[in-house]
Length: 171
Image (cartoon, rainbow, N blue to C red):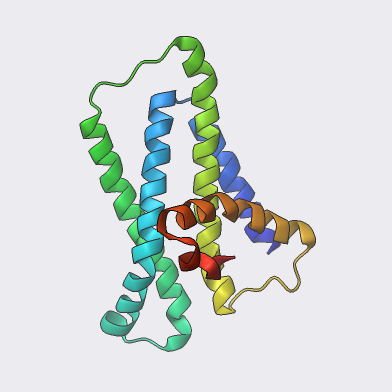
């Protein structure tokens, strides 16, 4: 768990570093694209992974979590690509904001983008944990707290979008 927490912090830091220089409009589109793609990935990815395991590869049941994990990320990558292209085509003219607003809200929205992406990464790491491949039993309290707080933004968005009872197993 130590290395997973370090990886999650690295993802969060890289996300902040890459988005704080962007403007408010670009970061807002990125936030919407990540949210939509992550929602689609969590909804469609496990089904795709199980389908690939059963019908395409006919593999052992012990590999189910790996196929589900790969299915979630495959759906995320394809959907983020399509959504971002659609957003770029629909928004040929970039929205201009007051320079002071763009200077403050752009980096702030970049931090939100990084938090939502790191939260999605944390949600996907719950797949091997729930499958029993990884566990929290030897983890320190700070590692459990890290995972709990990093998964909260995406989990709350998913619950608001699809209902409370649908994602109770990710808690």
